Image (cartoon, rainbow, N blue to C red; front, side, top):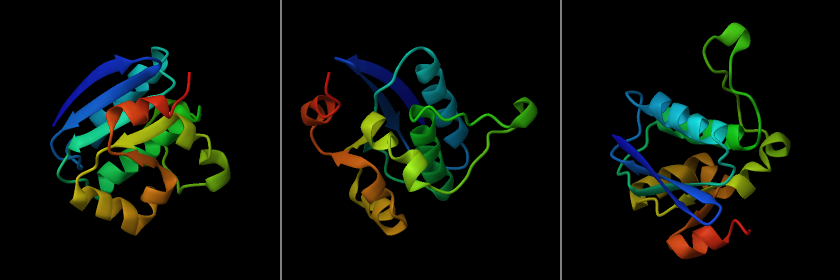
Length: 135
């Protein structure tokens, strides 16, 4: 999998190329955390070139939502990141700061089945997605 970034207005676009699975989901989290640490507050996750997302990849998406909601994912004593179930109250601001662009049909179906399609705003058009973040 390859990860690259671009920027439009006040939105950082994280472009993923390839499957997101147990072999690389931590890289997705680390790169998104680095962008957040560097000041990014609005993240558009470009999934147009992602044919498959495993359960580990889905966990990565949820973790990105937590990061951009301002929640720490760092484990106690600097250990492994902590993960937990989606909490509608704590994670509500994630919809404002993390959005998805163009998931392929198979990926969108998985997002729908597990409930993340209702959690994230999903766009098919880059300009509309960028404008949805406001100024």
